[in-house]
Length: 306
Image 1 (cartoon, rainbow, N blue to C red):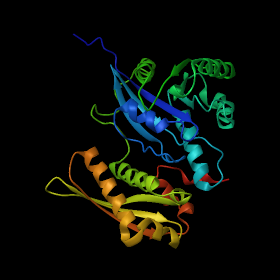
Image 2 (image 1 turned 120 degrees about the vertical axis):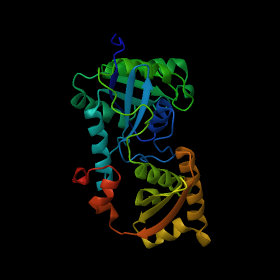
Image 3 (image 1 turned 180 degrees about the vertical axis):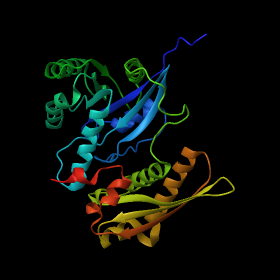
Image 4 (image 1 turned 90 degrees about the horizontal axis):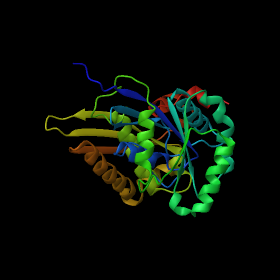
């Protein structure tokens, strides 16, 4: 007798301003850390996908870079990746912060949204609802829905998980009928080399300040599986200037050592096995103009053209 259960699978694009909580929401929806979360804006460079199961539906989340006004090639490539992720998705979720309301950035997204959406459902998710009073929240909801015809509106806290289960259930019901796109136990479609590089970059971003994090990138140069079940991972941190190298290394190498230990611990927890992590810092003055660096980040170099 054939099963009555109909499997569903599809893509959901999370879009919004930098630091709106997209990475935090992705991680909560998936139930594992697949997208780096820091206090700095624009940390998500590639369209990191997390895979969640809800009933008979497999939901693939495209966690796009934050949408902002691009100035440099890297910025333009990131924004192009974000809109590209929205254009490829079955459902779009616009995430805004309750306490920030309708900013210029949100207005710019709303202006572009109609061109990308077509007939696909678009949900509004208002995040950090614990930071505003209920009457403010109601007013924001009404104003946003007056500006765009959202299919559904959700009040959530990505950090605390409030309302996230309802959002995931709603998304699952809107996935197209399809065989599952990934094995049941897979939570991300990025190569492990890239996930490992992102973890190290997160630790650097948290440790360093000012503009430096946006002038560096991390690549996993070598991954060697060992007979004892462990793995040796060699990574390179590329920076634009000699002075940046000194900052990352720190006094007597203390900074790079602390970053390496922290990244290794998280990688071991993620993979459930021993990892030997080795970091090198190299100066490449023009890495922001090298197409190979963009490919490593899952971005299109040509999208950065003016």
